[in-house]
Image: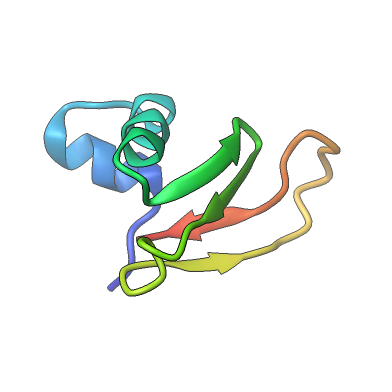
Length: 64
């Protein structure tokens, strides 16, 4: 089962924002908050799904 940053972070004591920062620092994600994308390093572990959220500041979801 793939988990969002929210659930991955909860497993290690981080919130979703902190988890996304950590994943970016480790090279699994690139981009900026609200517009993260999976890198080549992250592709074996993640899928990226785009869902309409109604917010112009939210590009989609990444699940690891």
